[in-house]
Length: 357
Image (cartoon, rainbow, N blue to C red):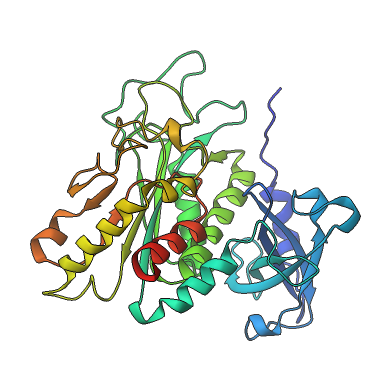
């Protein structure tokens, strides 16, 4: 029996979503749990908030989410960002939250708090980020979406940015996610089909500072919620299938005002790369779970143990885009982070290593 089914009946739900809700607003509070997953629950507000300052602090049972023991289970939700709700529409909102323990300290799952501190310390450098989120789609039976049930599709080659039946899978699902992100206010900048069939990528950014983590987490939430309606399970595992298939990463594009300055940018980029090389293993430690299965030196990856950098080299740890090298300023791409990396951790350590060390 399938473990996953679509949970939204549009024909049944539509009449109820069309009902007038008066001045009341539904606020979906969203947070990151103890396993790096997402949770949510809804609060009714008397009116639309003007900003996060108007939103109440809330709480939940942390013993049920891997964030607290049962004898001291209250974990508190502090709103940090508001997005429009593409599922309920109207004035309803999605509220991204940080998790805090009852003593007022960040919960062990809260990497945003430290990231926020680092971004404040580095704000004069205006750190910009653009993250490329790769993911793989699975169907109700736990098989890669669109793949033959008793076999495999043809080898990699025709699927990357592909067009046509048999080359592209679930484009309707991907388009739904894209439009939902745009409606919600997520700074999504593009999408494309990836090298492995039924593997996709969306890009978020450029975002400055803490906004990068906020926007990527909200884009992930929308991806999973829309998956509920399609009966599709998006996976962020960096190597969902063994064998001659590409893994999934979260390539992280990064720049500072110094890197973006004509005539000086390349020197700043090269200086950052030297600093990144010295702390390679510290970065690998926070760049996602099971990343050793992906960073093998094959399938457009570098070795997990050896740091490397190069111009237009997708087999390097750090890639300098060719146009950046030609013009002498711009940004670098850190290709090491896994698809399941916490964006707060990757952006925080990039700033910490290159600007605060």
